[in-house]
View 1: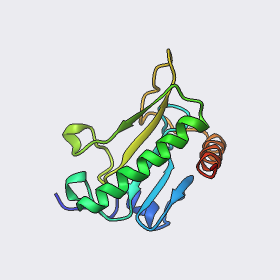
View 2: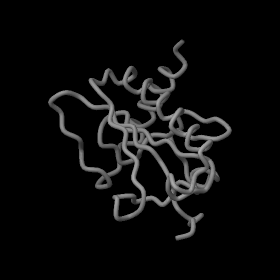
View 3: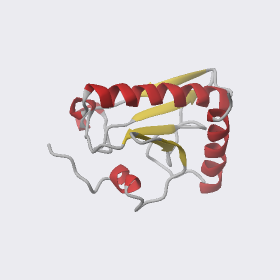
View 4: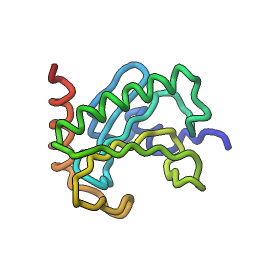
Length: 141
């Protein structure tokens, strides 16, 4: 399957759709998931148009996982999480719903179940607050 440049993440990269950005460099963008499973649920995407990890060069994948680790570490701190789940899906059969490679960073709490994903949009003001919390943790030395 060839990459579809009309997917929502490609539109976010082009600035056609707003996002609550928390981190950006020349290769990567991280932003709040609008249908979070937990407070602080963040997505990390490469700026190259690739559908799955198999479409990325080794260097692009290395950069993506490095940024994912950096954001996940900050999310654990920012949201006082007991743990963090990292998820990455390749292909519809594996559960991938947006055809642009991405990692989910989901702060987790002992005794608290995840919310269902993809069922309802989070409050925009709450997402903005969570983005600010995460940006503050990323800027802490």
